[in-house]
Image (cartoon, rainbow, N blue to C red; front, side):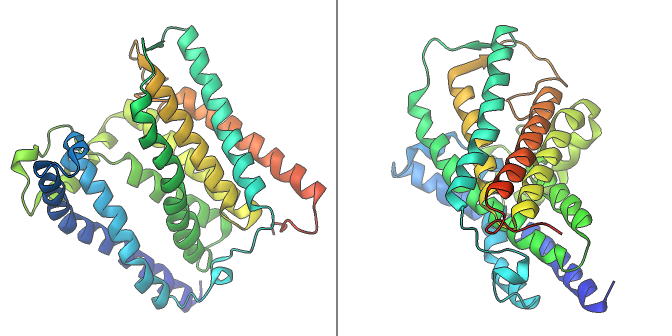
Length: 307
């Protein structure tokens, strides 16, 4: 590997370490600010969020804050430097990705209802749907820009496509899988070191093989699918559509149902955790590959071919 590529990889590792440290430092004041908004009745809805939620949001903020210095350090001046190209069919890719992710997941949910793993609520939680719509609209854009756009783009300058895909997917799954045990940091005991305490306790799930199989592997597969969508189209739009479809379907299903029985490792706390969701995700991967092949055959001159 060229020396320049090694330096880029080292800078990326330094960036990730900086995100963790800055996120841990920023989480307590972010939490205290949220509590202030609740006390002043400015945003009373924030009362339902615990410290761990603020901690994960602080990590995302830290990732965005430190992104500009990273791009300057690795001399990224434009999208082409990250292996991305303009997509003339961005809207179509977003819509296709959304359908290919949401429909199989909702069909899986219908089967689980029929098998009495989940049951329908007496009333649909319409008041919680705005949060689902916001998450499905904003989170995919931010996370795809960060993981499949910038981080994977930098890795592609240092590693092969396969290695970049695997490393990016591992980072994506670790970030989403790590979660401290409930009540690790009660809201009334948050201090300046609470973020670092959350980091220390976040690896507990790796000691449980059932949770590892049910959660981490599914997230890793989803990360691989999103990374492959990026490589297949050399753009982020198909990945954004897939990501949005999974968030929307999972959020909508959770507002319409409640879990009737625990079925780990087959089905976890929602439709994105468990071996069954993993198989559904793999089915979406096959459908996504088929869609790309079909779209390329229809418009070979406008859809980039992968090397």
